[in-house]
Length: 442
Ligand SMILES: Cc1cc2nc3c(=O)[nH]c(=O)nc-3n(C[C@H](O)[C@H](O)[C@H](O)COP(=O)(O)O)c2cc1C
Image (cartoon, rainbow, N blue to C red; front, top):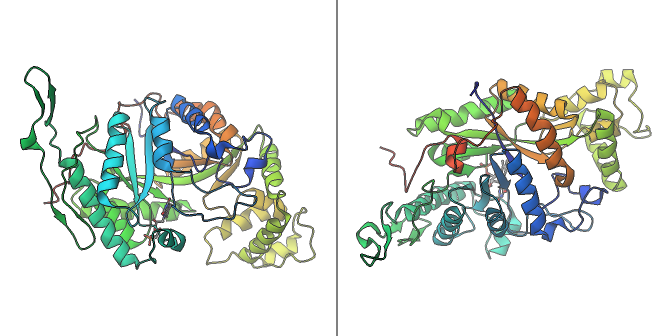
């Protein structure tokens, strides 16, 4: 093996991509939301490209208007992951499950069962959830961040406690001796926290990786503390290399402060892409998506104008801005995406083409060839900004194959992405230590 290599997970979103209007493109399968065969096909393709895991975000609520956009999440991540688990062999399956809107026993049971049936390929993205619509679905209102994080610590402790409650050597299933399990090794945990109480034991033996590794997403100091204590992976959404590096360093310091090694936490930076044979073709596709909704395009143009301190009223948004205008433009200090937006305008792209570059997307975006995408990933990785990426195609239907068939070989050729899975389990492939039950922090 060569030097350090990046880890890559694929975000499945709702069956389409990170752009919620790409479902109307000719390449898209319009009913992918409900088609588990399609999820399986994408997962198998990602596995062919040796991607480390599928990553499923989730908010148990309707959070966007579906009149002409696709949903932001799958119908149910647990069931999607289960469908995929039975049709794949190597790829990890990381699902997002809220620490606020779940009970510890249910969650521990679901995730450990899936970990056992997938032979140790599951990960849990433990998030606190801050969507009021989700709280309403659970008959409550959103609690303070302090309370949500207080519960998150307890939830992870309780779930890991339940996972460890069935001793590692307790599963005998010996016909001759007539002994199915060694009950002396299966013990209740009697967990009593301020938010969570559960007795246990959970009658499920360990998987090949012991138990699922924890992931975390949420960049506040409380989030960084939670990650430092428990997380093997963090899903991050910084916009610049500098911001990413600071965040990664803070996470690594937090791991050390909690008696772990800095390398025990792998940061996965969210990143979106559109791949075509040329940058012009990739931009044309993104323009077509923007033009599906003229009203929204106008809103985005106004937003872009505000980001660079200009007013676009009366201009032709398909033409580059006059040079004397650009001299007056200033990036908005309150939106970290603004400097990049101004840079693209100054390169001579029109406001519409600047939007087509994804400058106001939720993640950094690369619009271009497979080589452009590989260069971006390499630059961030080698700058120490991240350990890997959570990649989001604008549309899964052709984006996953473009990444696997065109970008992965370039990364492998450069020695910065593995050619084979390192082991059989998610922990082995991520290079994070084995753990069973609660870690002793003393
Ligand atoms: C990159 C990222 C992804 C997230 N994904 C989810 C998600 O899928 N489901 C969810 O309920 N919350 C998600 N969250 C929200 C977190 O759960 C958390 O509630 C929010 O970030 C507030 O916590 P903080 O104060 O630590 O940022 C995500 C947050 C970030 C930063």
